[in-house]
Length: 293
Image 1 (tube, rainbow, N blue to C red):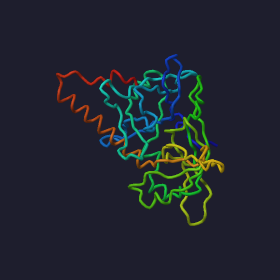
Image 2: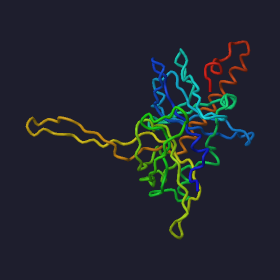
Image 3: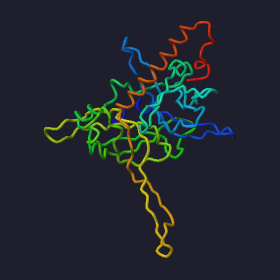
Image 4: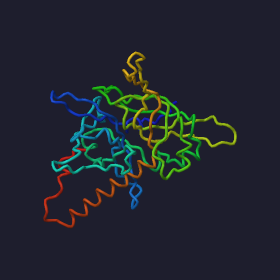
């Protein structure tokens, strides 16, 4: 019996940069989400979601997809900034919300015989209020999906799945409109950054309490919280070394914040389109030419 829908796994993508020796260095994880058009709910605009710190100081990224018609993968280059420093993505304005959204052109992926899946933000995700009403709270099991420690296969894009549980979210429930993060207990490592957190469906619950029976996107992983211990020299009276290790606690931003940055990116693209239409004699924006995806 499948617990995680297969298209959830397929919606997770590996993000990398090409080094000078032409080898790929994988820097993080992303995932695709769909925003239903308000004028036509049968159509969706599609976005790559990842962390600010994954794209920071990067001019370009490669996004890995699976092939549709055969075993294998395809890496799509995507330009993040132009020569003038203009960003082709939107960042969440809150300094502590580690999320960016990049609108992509799905037809390019499909035309290149690559597999396209995404989390529908209306049908496959829970905001904080919905998490609370369906009993997705402390102790609820979750999955962290991503590509930690450069574990990216050259023949198939297959994200690593780690099991964890929600450690603290009640404080976010108190103020869902402004909540920046909640905590999950899951072993995550460099490379997991930007990956989705998915709730595990449960069929057992305490009588009289809400029950979550579906897997849903409930947030984006930002980073683990390190535990630091200072080694002190009794002889010199000075600190000698700071040891750091993974505490196992991971910062997660809720879907509420993902939706906000997706809306910002949708508005950015719409404004770009309006400017182009208002100036038909001007040279069109090169985004469509420079961004392969």
